[in-house]
Length: 438
Ligand SMILES: NC(=O)c1ccc[n+]([C@@H]2O[C@H](COP(=O)([O-])OP(=O)(O)OC[C@H]3O[C@@H](n4cnc5c(N)ncnc54)[C@H](OP(=O)(O)O)[C@@H]3O)[C@@H](O)[C@H]2O)c1
Image (cartoon, rainbow, N blue to C red):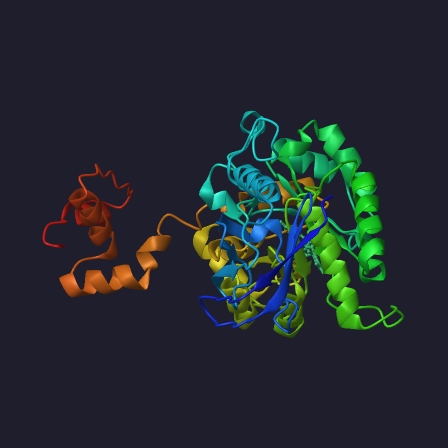
């Protein structure tokens, strides 16, 4: 660990807001894992190495481009020194470290959790872009995860079956659910390599606070039989009333512990759960690393649009829990109607609704048939679905054609051979009459 290096700032600018920090003192700490730029003013900035996009320095100044909080946007900070050259060696080391870190984030290596023999087992989960989302630090998160919790019981066989037979590669759990040890057993029994599985767990508020949080993380890893996690989340925004110190400070320290774990590469991404805008605002003020994800309840009967937009604007991936509304809406008439129309099951309709929004869903089941059924939530809702798209209907109406004719004509215009299938004579005729829909 290297010591701090002091230099004086003459001016500092930011693309989206002007910070004029004349003659302020800046401390540049070059640590093994992260740097801190402390402007020593009310605009105190703590940057993590993972936020740094590019870096340049000369004898006169050091310029660092960071992409961090979405609400301040990306910025280029230029610090002019009156000391001449900063200690070159330290800066070279820092540059090298940044380069390595970025390379690691983007390019899978043979030992990286992004590579591995997953294709042999199933799954195009990490290669098919419909089946994963990419977090803003380039980590791929399988869009369909397996929920596990104490609520409704835990089934070892169900988890093994999900991994072995249905291609699930994302397991969501929490210390609070009390099944981390059982999940370790199931992963082992499945024979699916650890690095193929996106393992996510959560820190319960009783464990909030810097050192306690780190201990909780280590406890979860131990129970899950792993030395790293793919995602570690704060389970709830509330800090227990008995917690020592100011609640915002407790949350700040807790989040900082997650950031350090990220810097140490003990976890590939860090997130929150059940955080609303009013919880995220102060966290974003205080954090170095914007949460990669926010896990909240999401299904057609609970769709927090504003929160989703808030997250999207800040590059925070929104993830949905209880996608089947805990099984309570599976007999709801609207759901049954759509399921019947599309020849799908109610749970597939609900899951497909989440996935069509590109929102990861975490259905939970203890039954093998349900697990299999849910894994097919990816399948298209019905081949005729696109024919009901308003835009297609509009074009069809303008040209006095049917939606099917518009689609066939579109394919032919692209030079694509098109083989529409129908068992109805009038449709076969209709599909052959596609001229004039330019
Ligand atoms: N962050 C948080 O605070 C939080 C809160 C809640 C949940 N979660 C996460 O989200 C996961 C799922 O949430 P959840 O368990 O509340 O709700 P859910 O997945 O929406 O619903 C689970 C219920 O649906 C039933 N079910 C599942 N598949 C079915 C199917 N194909 N047909 C009929 N019924 C089916 C299950 O019963 P069977 O076992 O009989 O199939 C169970 O009763 C949890 O396991 C957890 O990982 C997170």
